[in-house]
Every structure is written in C-alpha cells, then in structure tokens.
Amino acid sequence: ARLVAQRERQRGQTPFESTPLDPGTYQVTLRREGRREIRCPALIRAGREQRIDIDLSAGEPDDGEALIIAGAAFVGGHESNPHARERRRVDLGPFFLARLPVTFADYLLFVTDCLTRGGTQADLHLPRTEDGDPYFRWDGKSFRADRIARWGGSPSTWPALPVFGIPLGSAVAYAAWQSARTGKRYRIPTEWE
Image (cartoon, rainbow, N blue to C red; front, side):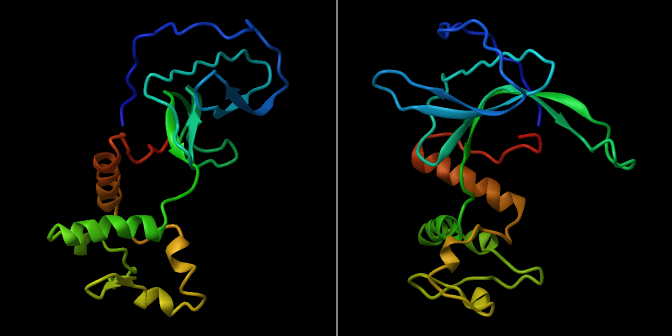
C-alpha cells in the first residue's frame, strides 16, 4: 500500500485553538446540529504537540463503524526485540473501521449471493480448514455448519463467530461485494491501520 498526500481543505475551526492534555488515549466527539455524532480515538504522546485534523468529505461513519483520525503511527518491532524490523513513522489518513469483525453470518450472505448468481467462484470463497475442508456446506437452501459442529457448542452461536479460514483474495472480494451492495467504499485495512 502506498500513502498519498491530499490537498489540504479548510473546513472551519473548532471552538478552541489549543488544549493541553495529559498523555493517554482520548475519544474525540464531534457534534453538529442535524448530523450524527461522530466519535473517534486519539492518542496523545508525552512531550509532543499534536494536531488533530478530521476530514469528513468521505462521509460520516455508519452505525457499527468508528472514525480513525489522521496521524502518525509507528510501525516495526519493539526495541526489546533485536530481530524486529526497524521502527519508522508512517502518516495515515483518516478512515472508517468496523467496530466488530465480520461474522460467518455476514460473510455467508456474500457466498450465498455468489451461489444464487450462478458464480463458480462461490466454492473458492467458502471458509475452509487448514486441510481444505469447508466449515459450511450448502444444502440447496442455506449453509449447514458441518465442520464447525464437530467443535460442539450451540449451533445458534456459530454464525456470530468472526469469520476465519478464508484467503486474502476472498476477503477483498467480500469488501468489493459490500461496496457494490451499499454504495460505500469498503477495503481491507493496511498493516499500519
């Protein structure tokens, strides 16, 4: 992934110029008449001045999404690990991130849509075990949790589990499907995000 600088756009000033804050994690809340309240996390580091820019030109977060504000992130290993990558600063733009992971129920709607459209790709997108067996089987009407059922537990809880056992290409295809379905742009977060 490549970070691309965008032209700065002035949207107006908040009611304060500078506010001293102790180091720590904060939640920034934006309220505007007739608009949804927006909350986003902010990390304030000791001994540093931090500017927080929030660009809402991409829209507002939906229910179940969080706005992650632009700022610097440090990627790489920790100084206590001599084999870790060198730490470096990466500037991130703002983005929305789902508060909860995609569940099997959410993901299987995508696979079901692939099946009903007659796509041959549906089988490739099925969540699978390490040995290649699908966790779910299509019975002609819906998916049955054949492989997951071996783990025990209540069948009603399986659809609520976070999806696993899919390759990156299937996760990208799911994001593209969500984008087409909702009209919003979905993608897989980068390593830094």
